[in-house]
Image 1 (cartoon, rainbow, N blue to C red):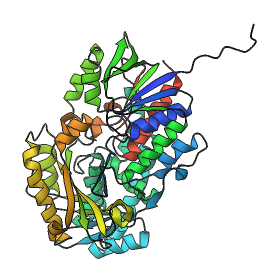
Image 2 (cartoon, rainbow, N blue to C red; image 1 turned 135 degrees about the vertical axis):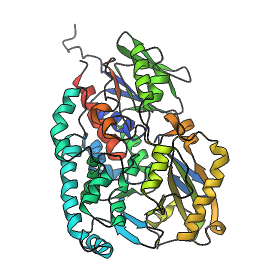
Image 3 (cartoon, rainbow, N blue to C red; image 1 turned 45 degrees about the vertical axis):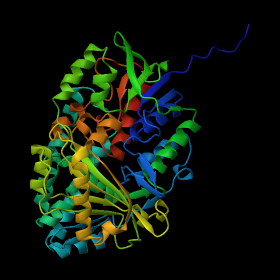
Image 4 (cartoon, one colour; image 1 turned 30 degrees about the vertical axis):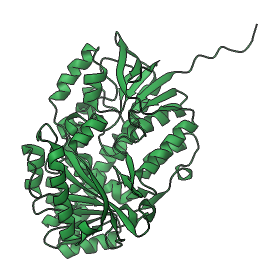
Length: 501
């Protein structure tokens, strides 16, 4: 008779969706010895961080602004590895060049003397006001990101516990309102509040807590993965598989099986089925509850509640490759339109596709020329647009019209002969977000980041009724953006590693 102790079988988990959140969670679980299978419907990992290669150009779908690299490096450090062995991050400077129709240009960075000089050009009195705003941003960063960004809010008591800090920093006020209390120049107010748009929030409505993004960038910088964001995804896949994790591509999850109050396994479109001790979802939260949990009564109640929530807008993105190199156009440019508050109200509140727009222009070849053929450049231009619930139109019809208008605007403001330089182009619209990512209403960032849809009010990292069903990604706490979804993975992994309640 063997004297060796009988080892309990390893616990198992299935993670649905191989975007940043799903990959970060899967790495954490596999690092902790949980046998993890990661399912992805598309032909490659990445989720919203997809990539296309066309005519020699590499086009990142996004996200293309990488902040807080330590939150990513931690995923490798769990097992004593170094992220730098698998991917190279390059600093981006300036972080953004902001450009207004009146000719005002503002280079935004964490080079304090240079930034103060840029502010002084707009309004010398605002240099002191900016310093006070920075103190405020440091405070909300400490409370909202360092203390609460990686912790799950599973009950209302956890929200009550956070309330004093939220009250201290006037979280009920908007980012724009708080910024305006510190600086007077309207250009600077826009420069210090636009960041919420990068996580799906209207600066006029999004909680002032999101001013923490400014501190996050100032301390950690803005970075780019050489080769494109997809190279960072590839590195995460390499690391996950090196740990023994299994990635299953091109096979969409179609059903999460439940028995009583337990999730028991997942079935995919091909008919593949696997049982698991735990199931975690990084897909669109409405899609998960509506389509994958059809047999669960509690899930259908949650679906009805989710349907009543406010969803972030969508995006319209024009990808284009052109002849010539453009060292004078930085990596990130924001081309503001003639309106700010009115434009945002049209998109977020009224569901109007206005004549004017603000654009985020991404120019990766100024940092990494390998993303285009020699002597050429890769760009994308991104415009926030209403989601399909507010603006139900035929994007196949409207898309080419809006694409031309956006390229015309870039031609007027930056590249006069842009149309004659184009080698290849295509666009990505709200209906593409819906079709490729099962994004509810074609929303690009899931639930809108309002105070009443944050922390406990967001989708919980663990389902209230099915205790071995978990959530990660933009729809959960703390929200969208790379640091947000990687933070949600840390919070969710802590719950899963605690064991079943």
